[in-house]
Length: 506
Image (cartoon, rainbow, N blue to C red; front, side):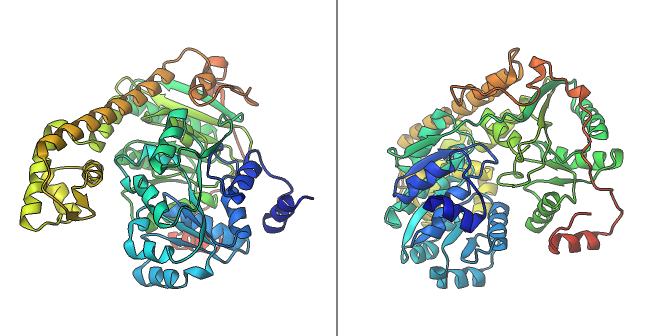
């Protein structure tokens, strides 16, 4: 057995590498920057976890979600790796201070992009040797970085301060365009690309047009009444996620819960752990749920609302069938469904007609105190969403007007208005084009699998299951039972105890 395979067996108990893992690991161990595109469920995390054990210095993993970090750390500690820790907003100040004071004791650090903007945290990290800097779910740089979480676009500055460690960017979905955007934003355009097929051969696709959202609920209810398997239902609306969960709870003999970003963090974590431990059968969720959730036996992913782009859709359906067994994607749409994603796009970008007003208000802040007020105050005063303000703040920071919350100068508002308007229009056009691609896919009359994956790769592998509703797969004939546990009436105290006792199956 060669040394790398021996170390794989020694540390993780695996007999062999999955496709793509070994070349990426060998690259980063040689100090080469890599962009790795591997399908959901193929073990991307191993490509940095094994190197973290073999290298002398620290591996930093930039991770987008607190729940994802917690799960990764929990799994590694369960395997016997103690020198791993997570830094995020869920950890109180004293615990953060303790971690950073003892940072040399750790080999693997999970951290959010926002936490890397904390000067004290970054200063502590510059004092140690960082061998590998990993961006997990790297498509977030391109997909979320421009409006939602602009700290992703500042990672190149962090890399400079850490003295340019080896970089590994990982994702399950990225078109050639998004791949180039990731490299450009990281200022690592010479990164080696390790791109593997992202089409899942064990998933059947179906799209169904219905007259109304109420008809969608009827369709889902009928499907779940005859199909007892772990399922996720995606919504673009928190209200609809809650409403559907309540209705399904009353109509199907399964354990149903909702999950969205408006819930308390502890409630979200409890729901996720219950689903992971097979204590919930169906999750009605927004896109806030699912990223990095390593649940092997999800058989069914339903989209109640239209995703805003093919990349999001592929990410979400990819969470089904991680164990390689057959699974199904069902997308439901009605005639007016395209309005909701358009509204969401409008909520992410500032109105070009309001840019002058925003810049005038920034001037007032500069003249009054030279600092920006609290974000909540700005959002209320300017009637902006958080994403809209994040977009404006980042653009002005890039142009030297802001440094964090400090206003460095009174800007040339005429020039800035022209520049910002142009950027907004470019982003609007880009997002609309992505939504148009999604709509075209829904109305495609050719093989759905081919039409879905063609923008991402040259060759589409033949499926190991019925392909799609354009290739004779009929979702209405699906009658799928999977030995689900008997549903028992237990108190919330008992359910909570089960979760924290290790989630033993009923």
